[in-house]
Length: 413
Image (tube, rainbow, N blue to C red):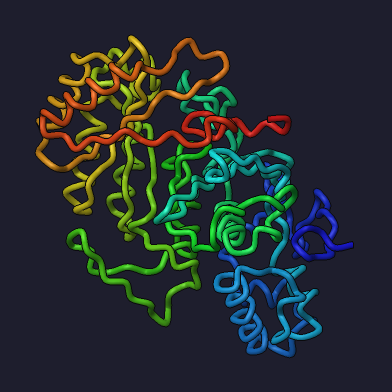
């Protein structure tokens, strides 16, 4: 029987993976952190399917074209591979993520997908459609260790990091859904009825987890998400495809944002990385006393240390840093708070940050609520009057618990 991905394989046993390799201590096949479609691994996993390594390399390239360019893992689409396509797909494309449920919000502009992982853990991603772009908010961990009290994910606690393949597959599912929603998963017959097919253009690591605590796997995933970029000395970039580049989805690294609560070693690693990513800092408060209540990691990495690291990132990458600030009624939304925030940002220079004000989204059990429209407007105009580029983020996915801070990966959500 074929599953919703056009394949015939049953669920994998808990002892061995598709290649007969052992699973790690969290129940995930150790080879799932490998790059997608490494022909050496493919040949080692199923040598009987190939005459020799040379043919394995050829078949791997064909599979890469189907996966990254045609966004297909259905052997019925692979006439160039022939009768071995079903068996090759069984080996090359194990079902790392299983879509369980989709919720559609904002009149079809936002789609939240609940996935089950092979160890039965759950994660969510959110696809947001705009007139000029399609942005995917993806998860980097199961749960989160930071424990921000206004965030639903923080209430789950931390379970484990996602593998690079689990990260890549979130991108694959979303990219495929934009062009072929019928192949995406259950309950998708009415998805995208208001939209023409389009390409995925932006990735934000703002789903479940603290991305800087899983950078090894994120960097590995980005090798096959992003088109290689060089010569990024200013806000323009020259994109060059080389013979040594890994196959990828062609999303510019400059269109990828990684958000952090302020893990200094992680920010420093991002500054040293080859990818010209956008850095976002979840700040949410202009003083250490308040931020330590809202973002507990501030007790280890205080406000000045975080902003110094962010400014160093700006100087190294020549990329403006985003400051994420969730406005909470009578907590962090006064004009005094805005002036203090402007002061600590301007102290380090001008035009190096962009403040993204976020209306607080409702989270069950949280004692805080969103600021009033009046307080929000005053806060925004105060920052702008002090020379800080500031915008109010459009809230997406509130009606399906898919907005910022609301992801909790509950099977009955």
